[in-house]
Structure formats: C-alpha cells, structure tokens
Length: 488
Image (cartoon, rainbow, N blue to C red):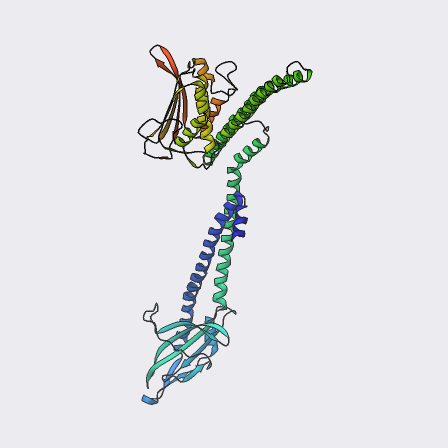
C-alpha cells in the first residue's frame, strides 16, 4: 500500500486527471457492459423462445389418439423435417421429445432429459408452457415444455412436448451485441482521454509559461510574479508566492544592510586595536597603560560581537513554526535587576521594582536580553542619585513592562533613529544595537515597544520605555507591596 501511494504521488497532473476520470468511467462502462450483456441474453431468449413454442405447437398438431377409455394412447408421427422450418441457420439444432398421457415415450429423442419442473404461476403466453436452461449431450440447451391437450374420436388426454435448442445462435447474437457495445465504449473512453489531455494542456499552459519565466529569472530577482492569464484557482498560489518573495526580499535587504553596517562598525575597533598594539611595540606608551587600552578596545569589540549575535538570533525567532517554552517574565526581570544591582548602587539611584507573575511564551535568553538592554540603557542615562522605577503588570491578556528613568529624554530625531541598528542617541554612547535588539525581540514575540518622554509640567522628567507582550497564562497572585531588587 505504501509503495502504491508513493508511485501515485509521483504522477503528473495529467496522469492524475486521466486516471481519476478514466478509472471510474471504465468501471462504470464495465458494469454497464455486463448488465447489457445479461439484458441482451434475456431479450434474445424472449425472442427465440417464441420460436421454440411455435415448434412445440407444430409438433402438437401432428399428434393423435388411438383407443378408447383407459386404453386410449397417444400416437405421433413427427419427422425431424417438421422442425427444419424453425431452425434459423446451421448454428442451432433442435431436439424434441413427446411423452404420452401416462408419461410414456412416444416420439423423439429418448435421452432428452425429462421435465422435472412445474408450470409458472404467470406466463406471457396463452399456453401451458415452461422455459428453462438445461444440458443435452454435453452442451447447453434452451428447453421449452408444452402441455398440449390432444383429443380424437375415441378419447383425449394431455401430452407433454419438449423441444430443446442449442445456444450457439443465441450466444453468438449476444456476443455480437456485446462486441458492438465494447468498441463504442472504447471509442468513448478514447475521446474522453483525448479531451482530458487537450484540456489539461490548455489549462496548464500558463503554469508552464510561469515556470519558464521563473527559470529565466536572475538569482537575485525577487520582484512579484506577473501572471494575468493565470486561472482563478491558482491565484492564491501566486499571491502566496509573491508574499514569500516579498519576505525574502526584506530579509535579504536586512542582511545586506546588517553586514554592511557590521563590517563598518567592526573596522573601527580593529583599526584602533592595531594602532594600540603598534604603539605598545614601539614603546610610545607604558606597557600597563597599553594593556589597559587594548583590554578596553577588546571589551568593546566583544560587546559589539555579542550584540550582533543577539540581533541575528532575534531575527531568527521571527521565522514561523518556532515552538517556545513558557517563562515567568517577573522572575526573569527581578533576576536581571539583581545582576545589575552593582551598577544601580554605583550610581546611587533611587530604585523601585514592582512585578506581577506573567507567563510568556519565549526563550529565556530572549526575555533576559530584552530586559537587560532596556534596564542597562536606563541606568546609563539616569544621573547619579536619580529615580529609576520598574513596573511589570499583567491584565487583559497582556503583560506590560514600564522602565521609567530620570534621564534627559529623547528629541524627536533621536526617537526616530534609536531603533535602527548602529544608531545612538549621543556620540560615543555605545554600539547602537541595544534598542535594535529589543525591537527585534519584541516583534518576534508578537508585542510592541515604545519610548516616550515623561513630562512634568513644562520640562522633561525622564524617559519611559514601555513593552507589551501577549500572555500565555496569567497568575493572579500579587505581592501587595513594593519590593527591593534583592528580595527573593
């Protein structure tokens, strides 16, 4: 069964159409042919049974009665020539047998099988006659049995007349009708096959033309397909293909831009590192100072490489079909805050964190990277002794994280560019990948991210980073009071 399914799956559309139409039609033709053959046999039997009945009646007309009363017996002088008029041609032969009033043999073929049946309840003929199939001398015959009243001047009785006819003529006629039907049915199947082939050729011509156009395309040509003559049934396929091409074009453009920007950004620290190594070799700076500068450059290059890898992983998460586990965003947020507690303490920030359990379908590293980048960015831009708040709430199917810093906020121009890779809000402020990574992660998780200034009267009091992610499940337990970042 598996091998048959494999072979059927490899058939072309034309073969599938032909087999799908010709098989049921052929089966219907076969059933119809068998039914027609049987109906033809019944029709031929009905027609030739009349001849058998006529021959039996002709024999009955040649019978007489001899003797009186109980001594009366049937007399018959039936030459075979009397039946020649009822023989249609040389392919059929007639046999007869006449039995008397008491069942005795009177005339005909004595070895012809006796009639053992009974008269039918209803008959199409005005005579006491029964028709049935039998065998005589090793070949099939059609038998007619006529109960014929015979009377004379001295007595009367009921004679039994049997006439048998071989079936060669009947079956030959039925076979001829069958053959005539078969070649017509075969011609019908051939016409169907030709029509299916022609229709399939015409219907799939736009597909072949589209295939040829695709093969002739350049490898980097991702423009939408143009197929105005395509059948309506294939319109969804063309639309889906164009959508896939558009996604591939966007992905390719993103990769080109990313590689271009990454190569530009990596070139700078590598050039600086080369100059620092040369200066150390030439003795322009003290060895310890040179090592410190090299360490700083290597650390920045390492951070840049790690952020580039994180951004690439975030882009991969956007691919469909990614099965992700469930994470408690609240626990991860508190863990990240604990990791960055030394930076918070170093800045002397007035820090507060409030969280509610929030189950998110995501990889752990993604939520950690998202929260870490936003919180680290807020710590860097909050002046010493400033205010920094984290609030994570869960309601109405969404988890909402708000990180409010006490920094200078953003200008409209900065807000528009901060989510672009390698774009920073201020000179020397970092690689510019943190917020780009955050945006890619949020979008891959089906959420939203927004940066907006917090206004206090007429001045900017700080920046609010808002992230909204869909919940997979909401735990309704609440802590009821603010907690310190070091609380369990």
